[in-house]
Image 1 (cartoon, rainbow, N blue to C red):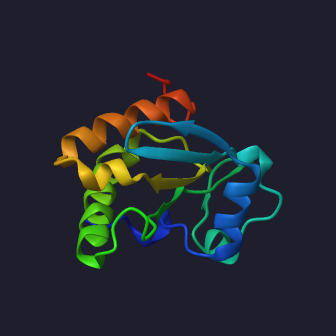
Image 2: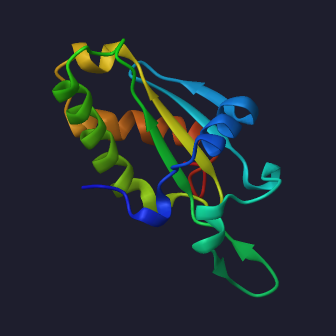
Length: 139
C-alpha cells in the first residue's frame, strides 16, 4: 500500500535538506534521516499545498521518502519489492507520527539479503522513529 500523496517527500530540495540538516539513526536494515519541523525555513511547494490549518498555527503533514540504491540490489524487481514493503510498514505507523517532520528511510544492503517480512521492517522502523522522537509519545 502506497503512502498518501500528502505524505510523500518528492522534491530533490526536500531530500537534500533532510540529508544536510537532519539527524541520523541507524538500524540493521535502515538508516533514518529525520528533520524537525522547527528547522523548516520555508515549506516546499508540495508542502504548502497540503497544509492543515489549526488555531493560530499551521501543521504540515509528515513527509516521508524512501531511498534505495543499486548497491542494495542490481535488480529493480527486488528494490521495488523492498520499497513496497517499507511503504506498507510506514503506512501502518503514519497515524502515530508527529506532524511536520520530514523523513528519509535509507535502505541498507542487509535488507535485501535477509528474507525479511514487513513485520520485521515495521519493528525496526518503529524503533528508529522512537529513537528520533518522531513518534507521538516517543514509545
